[in-house]
Length: 295
Image (cartoon, rainbow, N blue to C red):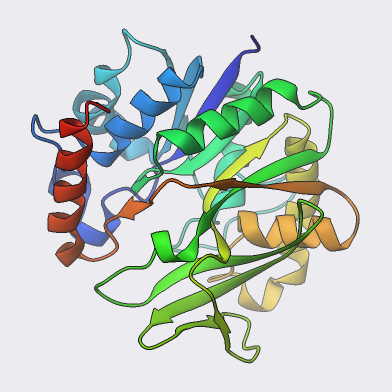
């Protein structure tokens, strides 16, 4: 079996609740969502985990979370810092926001020496998704520009508390043709309102969306770095707020024939804490999975 790396984007972890110390456990023994993510990845054959965090959070993050896994899997820490930019580019002094998810991946380059899976730190993806990602990473050519998105039925990701952001996926012959980042609201119908201002449209419960669970080969780093310079040049007028995001760069690559993105469906049910009110539901669902002997 090939080596496989799990890249967890955790630089913003706890931001919704006022910081890392305020993150509430969801499991019976103080487990966070991230615990279940690493556990599922290990079961699926991943051999290394890289946590992408803020440098100032290193001690607290390692003590609170990282140390739990250091005896189970190879653990590394990468720092997402705003000053980490291409040569001859400088971070504006007034910029507060990190550069986005695609920039986070670039920051982890030196720690990744295999095909890898990128996930959010605060999303529960389900065991099936990790096994399907692992299968893809095992079979794909290491030098290929063929990547994969794990697609979830939107009905399995809808939040009862309020609107949510999702990447609505369109595909043909098993490959993604469009990623439409949208605000999803569910009343009588499921309505997607694209963030780029395009007209809203309805989607069905079984239509697939991206939850930022993406499989890459190492070849992606060259592509991300080259396009980051272009991104910075194109966004000079919005340099304080612009974000370099994985869905945007993949959508661009697809349309310019720079990469292919396979769409892999999972039947797993997504869980996440977008709002504080979601915590009770997540705890109930985790408890059910434990009773079913999944953990």
